[in-house]
Image (cartoon, rainbow, N blue to C red):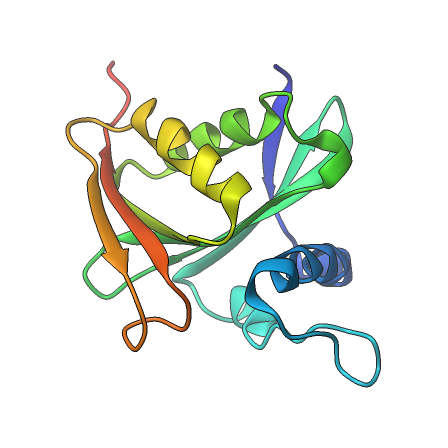
Length: 165
C-alpha cells in the first residue's frame, strides 16, 4: 500500500488544525461534550507541536492524497506516546491506518505507548492487532479507570525493534 508520513511544517499548521476538528468531532461521539459556541473543538496542545522538540506531528497520505495525521510526544522516561492518530472516515478500513501506524512506530525504534477509550470500539478493534504486528516481545496491557483517567480506557506499551542491517 502506498502510504507516506510527512512532518507537518508550521506553515501547514492550519491544515492540521482542520483535521483535528474532524478527529475531535469523532471523539465527541464516545466522550460526550461538544463544540464551543463558535462551533469548533478545542485542542490546547496544537501549538506545542511546533515549539517543543519532544513532540512530532505527521500528515498521513496515500496515493498522494491527504488521509489523516499522527501526533506523538517523547515522555520523560524516553517512551514515545501516540497522543493522537486519525484517518479520515472515507479512507478507513482499507489497511491504510495499519500501514501508517507501522511507519510511525518504525521511524523511532524503542518503547512506545498509546491509549484508547473503551467506548471507542473502532479503536479497540484496531490498535491491539496493529501493535501486535509490529511489537518485539510482549505487549503490556493496562486497563485504566477514573479517577486515574477521564474515561475508562486501555493503555498499550510495547517495544519496536531497530531495523536489521
